[in-house]
Image (tube, rainbow, N blue to C red; front, side, top):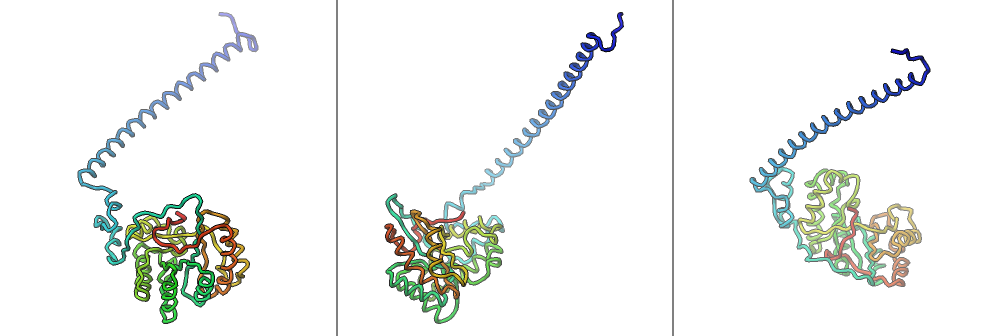
Length: 309
């Protein structure tokens, strides 16, 4: 056998052949490893499918149906402790609207909403709305006192809508559970009904539907309130009057800037002791949108809601 000299053509051919053989061997080994893992995965998937089928059959035999709750707004489930809240406050139900009022392309609507009252600012707001001949919506809290009761009755008597905002507890307490929210809501609901004779069917979640406090209970809570017939409303524009230093012109400017010319505007304004300038901003806001053909209405439960969720 002839000797292969280092650096010769035959030497490099042998080196290349050896490298190719190593690469091929590596590829074959890799393919075999992948095939074994694939076979294991298929076997595991088959086991899981068999297990899932077994669970599905068991559920069918037990007569479980997750759609039953939605079928009846007054249905009460006793199958789990997490739904015990459905048995609370059996009188806390209102009639659901059959359907929401349709909105046509040419129509433009404006809804003034005030939440947090009644307060010393409420009467100024009512005076201004009366002068402008506009109806609005007040999402109120349960605040004891003869004066507050008089204000609630004036809201109703002057043709405004009245809805629930809170029973007075702080948001971090209200949203500890569905039960704590219902207790707070029930307090405000019964207070308004006792003072005015009105059973409010619309409401606004304290701090809005989506907030940092209600994350763990949000889905259950919204479902429960809808099940009881209530309709909730957020907002798509704001006057920025949540601070004591907000001036009327700034409130009007912020309202117009955030509302722009949406087809339906749900404007958030506040009703608290520090909102001394809010009433004065209403005239400018109203004039701006009247020129653009908007109609002003109070919110009723057949108005299609705007929500964050």
